[in-house]
Image (cartoon, rainbow, N blue to C red; front, side, top):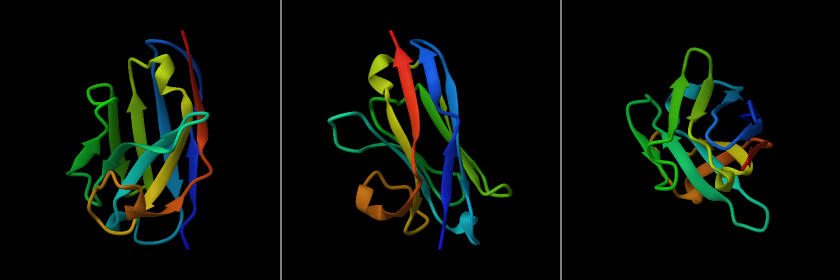
Length: 124
């Protein structure tokens, strides 16, 4: 069983930055990919970023490419997403997820554990 706990959300003005963290419990954190997804009110959950088990490979949604950076610290069982140049359309609940394997995918079905989410609100 894996538990994922997100933190770091909050209210920020457009153009600002936030860093989200996701702490994972359980063993073998360094064996699987991790992802971030988000869901805005009235919209489906969408892919944001993913990182492979080793941290070498990353993948981003086009909407966040160049503004968000995903990283991981396997010694701390934690994955991060640094979010810069935030826009009002980035407002959503952000979810951390554990991959079924070690490759970073954007497909929702490739992830099998999810955190409770953390709210990010960007004001204009």
